[in-house]
Length: 353
Image 1: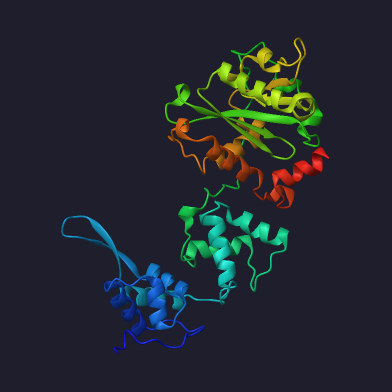
Image 2 (image 1 turned 90 degrees about the horizontal axis):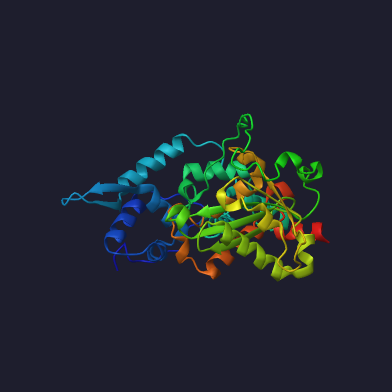
């Protein structure tokens, strides 16, 4: 039996040496998978995966294409560079259970680092180690995790507060009720039933299929509906469906809706009129000022979350109702820092009750 094929007792808490790195390089050339290499070397699978990620280089082939291969010398050099700059030990230590949980939440469930850490603390989940949000961001920046990188994260927010421009008058929508006339208590977000609404377009722009997105201001609950196009008729049809679905409860659950001045929302009378009780107003529509998206800030943030699943240019017409429901479910069950990492659905149970 060669020295490359013998099994050894698993070695814990000991760094790979240069001989082991050459061993990994040889086994990879033989077509072995990380799991197989780990078994041969008596190492943890994640140790092997991290080493392969650290020592991989991009090589130019003879046909001018590129390939990625592991190089033991590169892995050793990068290890030595990291060791020379090393300070205190990693807080996450050897808690693979915590590392796996973090990787799954970010990679598969599309959580932000802050949402992951917040959820762990809010639910009282028990791990051997614990880290804060800033430390998690630092670890991801440094490539500590084998299966996640900055590419898997939402765009990092610029914490500088934006300067709001002077609001303008909506000259094309002089008949609608301005947000300036909206009751002041709605701004406080203490009462359920006040929504913000917008449309998300995909491939085909204004003429293609679109999503109607409603965000409840006090709980951030989301309603997402697929429409064949971005038109006044399609928007009214979806609101009519919601009224028919909730019946007498509709006026309690939907009191006001704040929208922008897009042409799809300009039929305020049609949106406000009940389809169940002729002549009765079912809700009140308020229009934000032009170029003032912050007046519908919750809705704008919701659209950014949806874009994690539906990037710009996606053909929304090809999305199934099941896929859209899955996104809606994810958003309503996403832990939010503003609520102490409770979800929108959990907040709705508190507020509506």
